[in-house]
Length: 156
Length: 157
Image 1 (cartoon, rainbow over the protein chains, first blue to last red):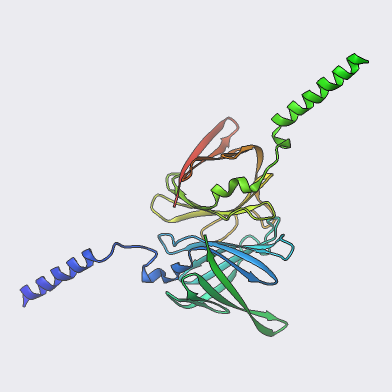
Image 2: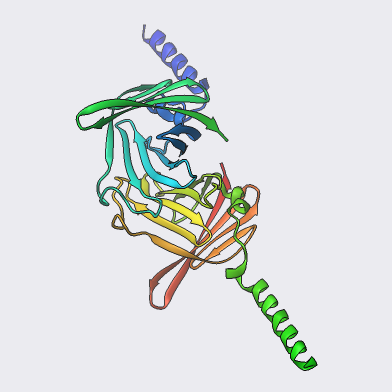
């Protein structure tokens, strides 16, 4: 019995050693990492651009977003952190003035995520294909909640 | 009369020459810096540096983000950067997303001179060493008479 346990333990070790090399980007702990890269889309009557880093050692991804209004000028910038707790976002005008004070940000708490979906309170990202995302953002105005649908395509 | 014309010509010529050597008169084209777009990793401050830039946009700007990790791999700070003809404006944040600057403030690195491979700002220089190599030099003033240059050797990810 003891020998059997030793053998199976050895076998398990061997399996884990020969399995694919560890990559933070495919670690199920950081399954939201598919968001890394550059994305373009349309929203709020203009066009959007987002760049996302891969996860850091602790799983944090950093993103930058900008919205171009119909006339090509910058409507808003967003500086975004994503980790297993959700998204934290700071907004800035085109002249780099924060909407929030320096220690404040908007939070979207994580509900659940997997390799196709990042579900947060009021904001859900869904992967339609490798290169397409649909994001649904719940916007509350005067107590009335509407859903803004944003489509994003992966670009180089 | 002939002397006057000659003088005028000389003055004109001189102003042309002055114009061509004055960086303020050179035309900055953000599209020249499309090579900066993408994702870069490197060293710096005894840890690792990571920088990403968007491609140039029609409004003449590029946006970028920098993050520094300490030697142990933990996050140290972030920067949000905007590059345009006047140089780079940036804001710093802690790993907890608290700004170093108040919400309306930012750090400015004014444009000094530029070529297609080099963006020289006051205290900060970006230089393309090859298609996949970027060198960043940052001057840090520790006191009145102690200024040190931190060099970041970045490679395209």
